[in-house]
Length: 380
Ligand code: SF4
Ligand code: SF4
Ligand code: F3S
Image (tube, rainbow, N blue to C red):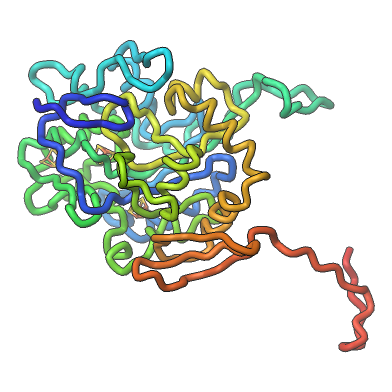
C-alpha cells in the first residue's frame, strides 16, 4: 500500500497503487430534489449497452428509493456494516475512520462482500416505499421536521479516482483512462475472477454468467469522445443531471466557470456519496432537502446540512439558477458556462456557444380572441 491524497476525506489514505490522476476526470452531478424515478435513464442505458445474453438483470444505471430500495439487495447496508464505525472530526472536515482499503483483511485489497445471484434479481425492490404513513385527511408540513420521507437515488459507476475494482483485479484487466478518468474492464484480459464485483462497494462491476467476464458502466466513452454527454444524462426526463469534468480542489485548479467545479467546489451544492469508503467517487449529489438528516449525514458526510442550506438560498442566486436550467438543455458536454442578462449560456471545449436558455421561463398571457387569426382560444 502507498499513501495517496483523497480530498473528499480531508487526509491522505492507503491505496495499492500510486496516485495517478487523469488529465480530465469524468463526473456527473445529480439534483436529487428533482428525480422522479421514471427510470428513463436506466432504460436508455439498458437499450444502449446491456440488452444481450447474460445481461438480463444488469443495470449499469439504476434508480433506487431510499432508504428501503437497493440494487443489488442491501449493497449499502452490507458494506457499511462490514466497514464498521465511521466517524469524522468535530468540524466535519477530516474522516477519522478507516476506508475500505485500510479496513481490508491482509489477504484482500479492499473490504469485500459478494452479493448472491438472487440479490441482483429485484432492481425495483422497495420502490416508492416511504418511512411512514401520512394519515388520511392530513398533509406533511414541509417547513417542519417530519418522519415521512423517501427519495430517489440514481446511480452509475462513479469512475472513482481510486477504484476498488481496479485495485483488486489479479489480472490487471481494469484500467483508468488518462484522458478522461473513465474506468474500463478490458474484456479480452478479464478471466471472470470476480474480485472486482466483491471489492466495488457500490456494486457497479457485474458478472456476466453467459460470457463469463465482468462488465460495468463504460461512462458512454464513445459519446464523451465526441463531446457528448452519456445516454443516461441525455435522456433524463427530469433534467436532474449534468455530466462534465471535475478538478481536484487544489490551489489554482478549480474553475468557477466549469459547471461541475461550480456545483461541487465553488457553491458547495453537491457532495459525493459515501466518501468515507475512500474511493473518491466522481458522481455527486445535490442532497434532498426533506429527508432525515442522520441518514443523509451517513450517506453524504457531515457537510450535508451546509449543502442543504446553500440549496435553499438558490432563489437569490441567478448564476446558480442559470446553471441548473442548463441541466438537460443540451446533449453536448458543457465545459464552460456564463449567466448574464437573465440568460444562461453554455460553451464547448473550444469556447463555442452550444445553447442558451432563459433563467426564468417567460409567462405570456394571451387574449382569448386572436384578431390576427380570427380565432378564439379556449384555455381551460
Ligand atoms: Fe470501480 Fe465500483 Fe468505482 Fe465503478 S464505482 S470505478 S466499478 S470501484
Ligand atoms: Fe449507462 Fe452510459 Fe450512463 Fe454508464 S454513462 S450508466 S454506460 S448510459
Ligand atoms: Fe479481474 Fe474482475 Fe475480470 S477481478 S479478471 S476484471 S472479473
